[in-house]
View (cartoon, helix red, strand yellow):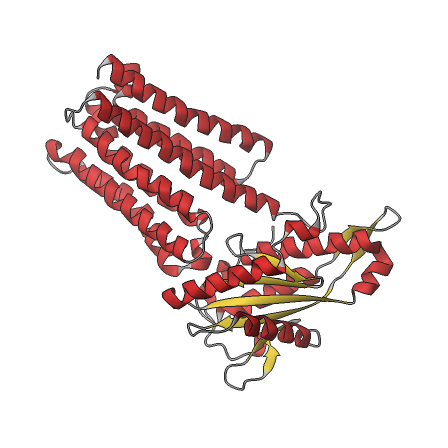
Length: 418
């Protein structure tokens, strides 16, 4: 590697390291599993570029020879496999889409094994085979992220752009490892692709983690945000539902709309004052968001009605667990600040209405009307969660509805409150 090429790739590694250090600083201030995975992702990308670009051999001569060859064969498949594992969690694929979940999990397991299998090939074929496996894994990841984009994931376009830039970066770095001759301009273009891909992907990871932190407010913690501005408004929520219905007509996936009605607000106001009522609303929004997942929007449709759109579900039977968990979470006690400045414990009087969205068309206003009607009916039910029984056409408690067979393996797919 010439001096100019070394400078180019060293600058790319510096840009990648800067993003990793920024994420590491954020992790120390706000530690979480997502933060740790973000730092690990950037560290993995740094090692991948270091090994394949040739900078590693210039910095550490001991890495040359057979050790370097093995590292170059394994780096791509292992890095792409780990990325698939982390992106699976980032997409919340286990809850939203079974195909995406299983494909990413399988790719995360198989790609490192394929990298090891490449070592059994003749030495001249090992790096090209590893490059092919890495590119296939990256293309698969890109396709699944675009699929999530079509299903309504708002951050998927940023992640897709990062994954798209990964393709030329991986192909080019493997070409460098195979000592394919190329000019300085090509090195500059490939280094820019690697650095930009890492930056865009890191931005998407950071935004999703920040969203998760914003919705992780426990049991009425005081917030500096106004309840109205913190949530989607009724108008913006309806727009999201209209767009989601258009997407669902293309994807033909089942979904759900949940309406959470809050009753007897006057009693809470008398006990805790207006500030306590607002704090209760913030807590209800946070708990609902935790249960449906950060990829599904939650909005305040009007004063005492919250609505959540779950655009894709595995099966109608899964709605039992979702409805019961949302209702159970919202019925737990909340601590709010009273008008006298003291912390008081309250229990919200709520009802949860669940509407199953089938693959057929349905008007948004009808969906919202049905959801509110079932939420009002749920107030008189023990579980406080109601749904329309498809066999009788009656509004019944969600645990008694005929929604198809229960699937025990799906119980873990609804996020727990931590």
